[in-house]
Length: 71
Image (cartoon, rainbow, N blue to C red; front, side, top):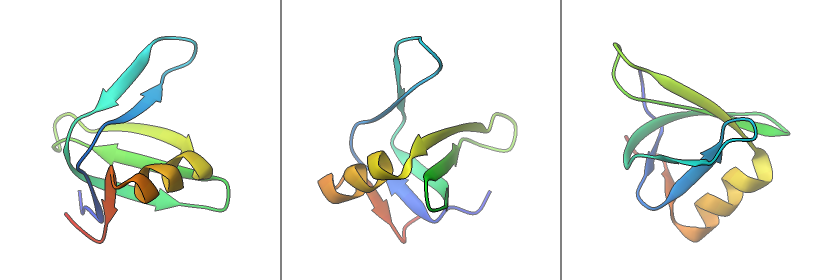
């Protein structure tokens, strides 16, 4: 999985109505569109994926929790 960003701070997502889940620090693949960011992480045997609203992704980048251009 080619990475184009890195989680360096606390980044969370919510699966349905469940509790918040933390994305572990490390390289991620971020596919951005006008309204969402699809994030993938993990190794080839256990890739995990979630979608965030683009505003939430941009907030994580602005706060420094996600660094683009790394990985």
